[in-house]
Image 1 (tube, rainbow, N blue to C red):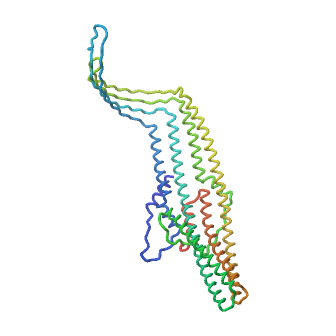
Image 2 (image 1 turned 135 degrees about the horizontal axis):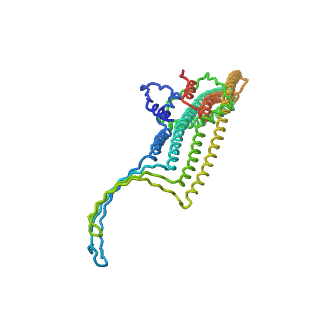
Image 3 (image 1 turned 90 degrees about the vertical axis):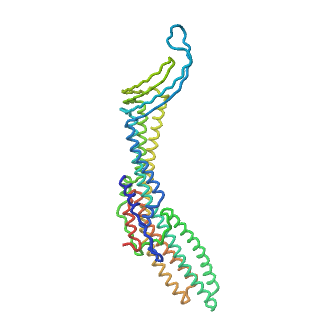
Length: 451
């Protein structure tokens, strides 16, 4: 996991964003281009990196639990006493005495046996392991979020482009209908139908433009900048059939999913908490050494003193009774561990569900791409024949508009299916916890302009 942290830090340091020459058309950004920007600017990843760096300090805190503790103390005081001695022959003077005192000292304490500290050291290491996994999980989520936003933006852009193309086609049909009506070769119905379709597509254009702007802002929230045109999926994309069965993916998920591993770390920590609280019943043994110097220029007896004291020894403490708090903490820790084990099972089942859902969605998208390709071919043939029939007078304007609508819908559905196919690959890899930069690179190869 430390290698992961170093790798991410190195990637962030190596990223250089090159500006396009002034006046030149910017090259479409690929998925990897957007991901590199996300690595450098995503605040969620930056937060996780800093949290992980902070967690690494727990290692030093763990070591400190069995290192010596050295304290220095110092003090000064001023005293006044009024003494009246009873009886005869007392050698000390009666009356008011005023004097000052000074003291300083150093104490060193070395734990020899503290079971609680030993267990707490193990707990801190468990927390560091959990923090490392959390950082890696955040990086995996960034890959998924970037891919999702990238293709959401492409889908929104393609819908707007198709609507604009459809709008131009309907406008042409409207003008043609008006011309035919003026020469008496068609009825006003054709004109009204075309006008209604045109008004509807204008409304759809407004909604599509809004959807695109929102999608761009989602991408901007990850990369920190508005993206230039994005590279689209290759028109000759051919989906690859899944070679691994669902059971194989589920096995990978059980071994690799970081959500499960994080919950397992939490369960381990909860078990260690039981042991730490049980250790509160055990005695502790410390080696102690101290040195003090004290000085006073007077006392109740009228004379001062200078005292230097050095001690060395061992200190044993045996807890006898603490009001029942220790037993209560142990029972609480036992229940917390059971909850942690329940959370492990929740994470395991959720991972299985996410893996199954992603697997079936990917299988479905593979089939849909092929089906929509056939549907597009059929819709194109229908449009061609309907247009030809309209030109010779055996088809109406409504038939042309309907065929046109079906053709654009087929184009839209095919584009969405291709995007969903590539996105579902990443979703499945993310669900099992096996997603990596190589997976993004593979998807990137399916974009235009990528070799």
